[in-house]
Image (cartoon, rainbow, N blue to C red; front, top):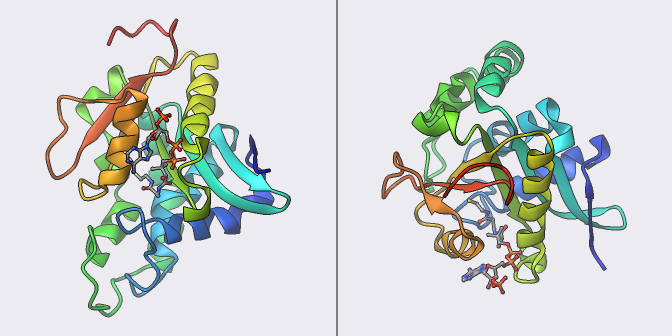
Amino acid sequence: MPQIRPYRPADRDQLARICLLTAAEGGDATGVYSDDALMPEVFALPYVEYAPELAFVVAEGDRVLGYVIGVADTAAFVEWWKREWAPGFAARHPSPGAATGRDPRFTEAQLIEAGTAPERMLIDELDRYPAHLHIDLLPELQGQGFGRRLIDTLRAALAAQGVPAVHLGMDAANTGARAFYNRLGFHELPSSSQSSPLLGIATGETAGVSE
Ligand SMILES: CC(C)(COP(=O)(O)OP(=O)(O)OC[C@H]1O[C@@H](n2cnc3c(N)ncnc32)[C@H](O)[C@@H]1OP(=O)(O)O)[C@@H](O)C(=O)NCCC(=O)NCCS
């Protein structure tokens, strides 16, 4: 039976792979970009480097099947990213590779921009929703309640740090994920748009954010 447990450094490669396998509207993004490392280097690996204590996985033995990752203070994360993550990222990805012919949410140039200029994460609502998260489960784990339990686990960890609320940005085309977030009680934030939904939720009953 798969179990939720805190992230360990040994999970890093499996976490990166799950990110890639779920990055195209929730499906496999292998080969969408000239370098399969791009997606995890923007949407997964910086998180576990910066805040491993806010990363939780679902694992069966040594096999990782899903994760939730987050940061408590997005503005501080952006500063860290500029200082610690962007230089190495820029050196590894100096320019976009050849087009692959796939039609992704972001062009490769946009993804490289996202890796080097993290200011895109400074949304207007950061004062009330300072934390943000990403969640991804392999298809074999989906639909069994683990997504809900992972979100609950992260919300509790954030609440324990005194963080009032958490947000996320998502791909509008990922209708399954949108149904999931709606079911869990996430709501749209004011700067949400049809093409780039921005959703938020309080971290706990007693966190002091009225919704
Ligand atoms: C989206 C995702 C995290 C949801 O996790 P999950 O474990 O499959 O969802 P759960 O089983 O915990 O479902 C929780 C609730 O949401 C509902 N739900 C989940 N997926 C749904 C879907 N596609 N359509 C309608 N409802 C859905 C469930 O019915 C359930 O309701 P209940 O608790 O009242 O019974 C997971 O499917 C996933 O990782 N998908 C691929 C990657 C992805 O899209 N990540 C999000 C990027 S923004």
